[in-house]
Length: 228
Image (cartoon, rainbow, N blue to C red):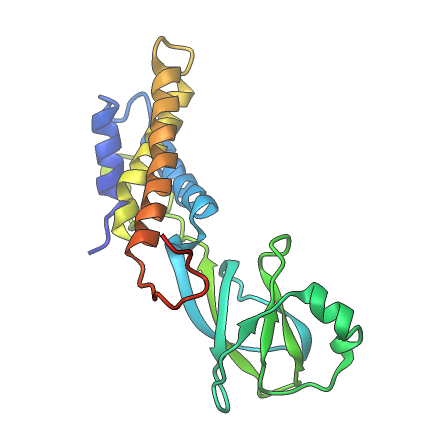
């Protein structure tokens, strides 16, 4: 069951000893909530990983759907034989086949290439035909903002849910507290409280990443896994 935005903001108000939302208003908290969801994706793009079948445009360069923030993988074709697709180094392909962008388009893709400087796009080899080529893409999707109520609104006006897995609820709470204390950083102790909550936020994401890696299925014969 998804955590509600209202429950997370309520906890933030209690932690701030501002349960009636006088010092930090409900609309402010909603803004912090939306900012925090996006901040989590900056550090953990896989926090909202999404699979989709994507019809390819003619040629080599492909652009992800509008709701995609960053490409994570292109596992396979979704048409024809559904052949697996492997990532390759574009620099090697450019050196060995300088004219590959002009090759005849096909409906079965063999390789994809990704450049972190252009996170919403990727290249395919051979080039995709004008129609008939489609691949499965795994990407980090943008989160959906909750509506920000009008000034003076009470907590009951908050609607919507956390648009990430529930395990990120406490992480988001620390981000909201960081932003709240940062507003009053000139008061004694609040700058330290803000820094402490951001450290908890960042560390929790790192710790969760390590836990995910440790729990992931691995094979002793997998060449991508270093021996212990």
